[in-house]
Image 1: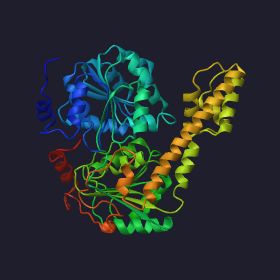
Image 2 (image 1 turned 120 degrees about the horizontal axis):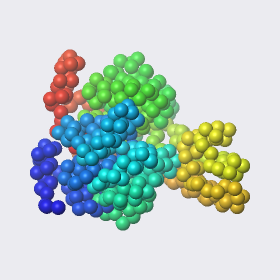
Image 3 (image 1 turned 45 degrees about the vertical axis):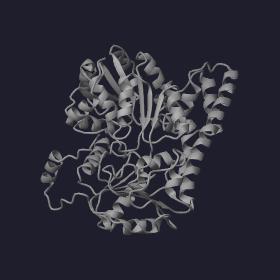
Image 4 (image 1 turned 30 degrees about the vertical axis):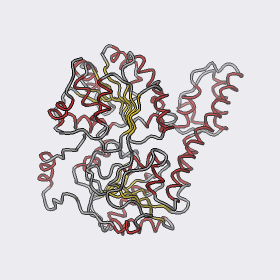
Length: 499
């Protein structure tokens, strides 16, 4: 391949004059066919690290993406930059649309797809006929965070990579401890990959934890805090019901244009809320973790956690959605005694008990096969518990009692290990809550040595006055009719949007 002036491509195609920290090194690795794990902070432009190479490399770049909303937004963004040879395959498409994309893979530079769709035999067969120049796993922490229980097809990506002729692999994430980094590379079969790990902290974020006595006081504190703000805000909940309830209460207090968002909503309604928030038609979104990875809105000033996050990685990912424009922003976590009980309950519901493991394997032995989920209703397994059992039991000959005993021991050992890992994540989160010192130092110590000097205030321990922060929208355009605001968004898109 002749030398390529990547900066010229950056300027001509993406209209940026300089790379952000880390981007150029990751892109050079991709262009030279090196397997790479890249950790860059939220909002640092990870998508450019594969979008730019896809324009230069021959053949097709595959991007494994975890969320449909994320795929849809990314396709819109790259097409707005003039990249037309791009598509996403997902369940929102009609059969006709899927056939059209599948039949024109050779005309694409970039294909977004879910790990589940990559397991479909027809899709595998079609992709095997193509030259795959780069295999990208976006939000690669999902392999470790979701792959073991929720979405076990993430653990099969190594086989997909093998079936496609071992193309170079690029795994991208904003947060991953050294332990998670190793798990990502192990599951992808790329333990020798080059690691490009950059500081995960964002110096424009102010960190604060408000210790509150009970749930009623939480809502009062929240209403008082938000009454002083006039800027885009997100509030994270662990409960769908509470997201809806607080949303209604905030509306009743006339705190702006407010909506809720969670995985139990109709997909069209979810997409509508997301687009309204992106288009400045909503001020506050009360949401669960389902709302996040597709949110590339540069001017979010405040991210609030109403409930305790189960792990530090999730917390850092979510607060990183604030201040993508580099301006001052705030993370506020509301903590009441006993809040850790909710994530503890989730841990128990995500993994099967030893009794459920024994009952599952007795069912396998009696029926001489691994059951479908529908066959396990009487075992009262959640979907994640069932996925865990299937992923770790595998396809075995369950006609032998010895096989059942051996598998039971293996599953129980694995269950104990995963429980311990999840408990440790929660313990680390509680250490951030209870630290007597700098929260920033305690938050990032599991990921890196030290942190960047904060641009404004550091945390509520270093700067107790942090709770008095107030925000106005960076671009106040009040009074514009809705159609004028949309026109403004079209013709005045921020240069950093989607990089």
